[in-house]
Image 1: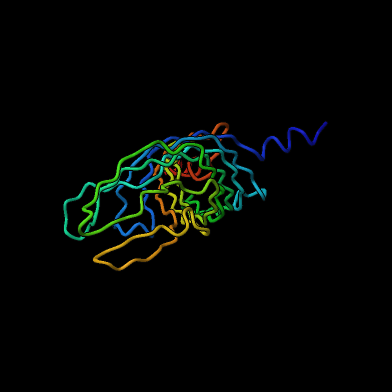
Image 2: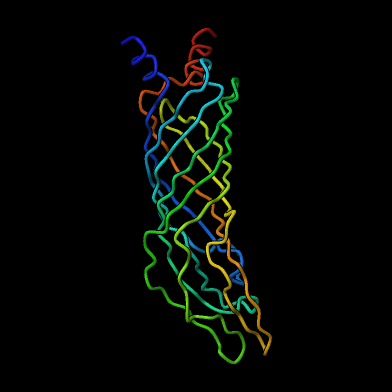
Length: 215
């Protein structure tokens, strides 16, 4: 009976919302041209009494993909393709006891739940991407790094970068001036979001407020 409230104090739920910019390595394009929405729920699990180490587990929605509308000669074709994922990130965080900055690293499992029909335009006399099979793989496993800091009480800012460990598409074929080759594609994304952590007892916030009162 006494262990239930103790464990409850170690776990704080939170919600998040923000935006995500992404690209696909191997598509012969450059830059994070695709922007989409991101949001989800998570749990902050304290691993020690000082809240120095913590584990987070989330369930998120992310709209990643490929977008390029540039007319630059360096870009061979124009494309707009949305990839809707459900992400499950598991991250271990270290918290700076003085400044309150939280730095974490972990893994993200993603499941492709929807791939709406987009568009792709190219010059068949110059550069040809294979459009006969534009389906991406259903499963994605990525490594991730994240930084968070508290803005006010339970409100936090987060920035996360992730890169696929396994290909999200295999053997995408391209041809240019008679030369042909294949690329394995890997996802890369940057997520910027705000989080609200319920029942947060942010020591860095309270310590700053107490220090100001003493002065």
